[in-house]
Amino acid sequence: MKAQFPSDKDLICQFLEGNQYSLEKLIQRHQNRVFAYILMVVKDKQLADDIFQDTFIKVINTVKSGAYKEEGKFIQWVMRIAHNLIIDHFRKSKRLPTVENDKDDFDIFDTIRFTDPSVEDRMITEQIHEDVRKLIEYLPAEQKEVLFMRHYSEMSFKDIAEQTDVSINTALGRMRYALINLRKLIKEKNVILTK
Image 1: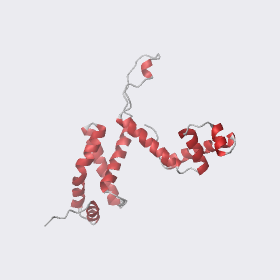
Image 2: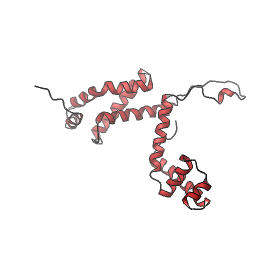
Image 3: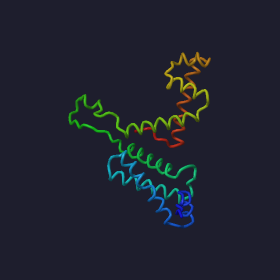
Image 4: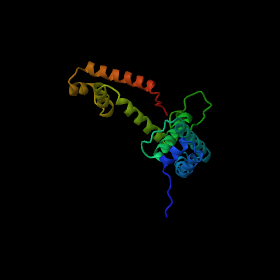
């Protein structure tokens, strides 16, 4: 006879009904995969331990508060939390190599980077682009259109005006309002768009 293993969803339900052991079982089930992913990205065991602990603290708090919604696989949700915490860490630490220069005069070394973009930099940049694309979706259609034409298609305002059959001033105005509205959305949704 084959033993039945409770699903992640079953373990979450059991935890919410008061069975503390079921959450421990759930964490043990996925801890190796989550930790391996974090370590692969941050390449520092102590930092990976910290982010791993923060990930599961957030998981536990979210499940306890009843805010966890079963919308897919539990592990994918946990991995997304870990990914976001890694991004947050790199944003806060701004881990870029620097060279000290005690002189007050100009030094060429102040203006160049000493490394290619790291995995962390690329991840943060991708996340920023994804966040901006999501915010753009909230804009009115004509503002969204001008913004895409200008920044993604690299069209001039003259070309945008011709294509949308409006004056250059109208195209400029729509762009201006798109940027104003994006700034408001960034503030409202508390989005961080810096490395």
